[in-house]
Length: 511
Image (cartoon, rainbow, N blue to C red; front, side):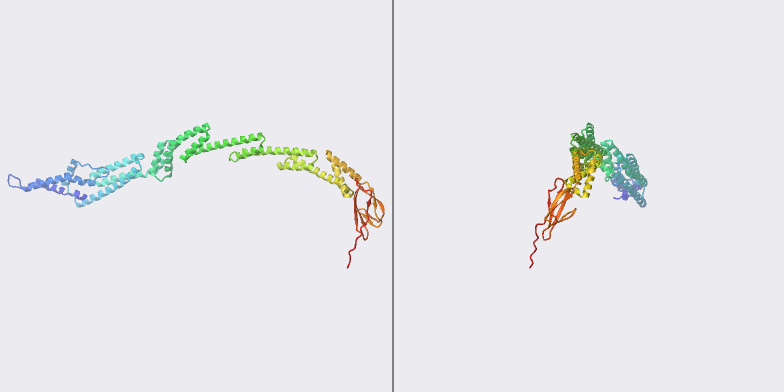
């Protein structure tokens, strides 16, 4: 049965017929029993009344409102029956009322859809007052709907719908504030509040990263809080390894916990500082034990930790300086011994080693210069004394004389230099005193004394020569040339020098 059919049912028309019957009854003959048609009319009225009472309410239930179930009462049934029976509604009016009813139902459907969204968003937790106020408007609309004032019902539903929509539109703002409150609860270690608020934020926006992260953090907050208490106590007691492990576990549980990361960094830094200090102490202990190389190794290990490198490098420099000082001390001892023994080239070499360690050491710079000069003087003296015969040459004599005077100018010559100069002085003096030399030949050989001149042929002759080395050359036709070398002076003067050609030259045969 349609809604139009409910309001245009037959009982309304029957009511009006019944009323006319009772007001104007037809005349009838006096009989002991009423006519049959009267009983039929009464039966129809009874059936109509029963229909209004029992059938019509069940039909109207098809149009009950979603917000509140209609409760049928005998008084309402009688009132509606009476209204239907006393008021006639035209088809046009019924069509208009159907349209209005449909409009009211459409607005109500939109209201209910928004209500469903808000219920899913747990509106009771954040917008209950405005939500209930909007539903009150919907309830007023229900009253208008019950009285079939569908226009007022529609408008009232619209007010409730718009109010619920306004509540729904506040969700972004509520989400923002919820996240702020949730973060505050998280920072204050209120695990229950934080979980509830972040869960609500996730309900508002399931894809909100801040809400998702916050909810995860809130769920582990109790464990994190307990670990913080333990780790902080361990840190204060100096149990750094244990504190480090617990702070690390907090970071593992809540990687966004900045406080835990900061404290973990503090613990790690303190552990590193302690390790650095221990290594440096070991290095200095080795340095005190005169083990600078081992100390440097420790200081280098401390430097590799990446902290306080200036301190480590300074310690390395100090150790290297101690090594250098020890090496320099050893070299100075070598230099002193070499100079004392007048081994000047050895002393100069040792000064070079010192300068390799520290090129700015004045004693080494000056000492090397002096040692080199003394070494050069010693070399010249050795050469002169080893070859005194060369003193017969004027240039060699002059050079040797300069060397002699240079040596004599030294204030502290030392025994070696003194002996060398004394010996050279004798050689220089003797090199200028001529010595007679006897030369013998066969009176057939032409004799020439190099650097002196040609002596010709002779049997025996004497020549005065300065000490030195000489060469006599003899030539004779048909005989092989001869050369005689001899030294004059220096204890090497020969009794006589024989120069004569005795080996004939054999001519090659001709064919």
